[in-house]
Length: 275
Image 1 (cartoon, rainbow, N blue to C red):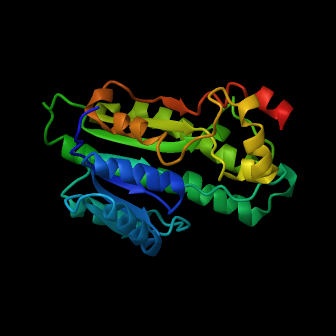
Image 2: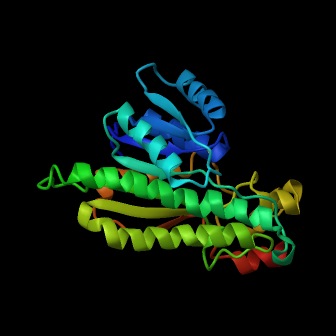
């Protein structure tokens, strides 16, 4: 892997362990980051990351309420992010809302609407806002050899056919929508030299499903049900794939979902029999 990724990256995030891990490694490898989400928590995250790296790293923060229903709010936030570094080379969407585990017949209208707003509408609005600006900038350099823009959606195996977990119908359905969005938008905007991919990550012990069955029980059964005999390490297991997808090495990859799950989804029936 190259020592430096000189990419201007917009990254939606919360202060969860997955976001922290990706932010840390992208900054470490030279990306100039704009973090988007709750301004207060992201400033804390940025400060924490920068304190462990040298002072030359660049992380800015733009506030955005992901439950906002007006597309104009997302467009304005992206415009501000775009202006910070004079453009963006990549957009990585890490912000999702999982919510509590519920039987599908017990999910309230309010809970379902919140899930859809944050996990389906927000990524769609952000993709449009980022891709339009990438398109217009790319058209100014039509002879450029490299793929100009990269968009990456971080999802979970709960949104895939082979990652079905009871109690996750709202969350899983919303992630499935995002994986389909990656495929269809890649087909539509590839002509503008913009690539769109998704990552379906595995579960870590802080996720809702392992927490629901009990962390002690999940840890105890790890050796029996996990091919790599461990759950996802949120700080270190995902960033290399994100770096690959936003980098020039993946210039011919678009419209795909990469599973970074330690084969959790492949052994799902076996996992359920143990848990």
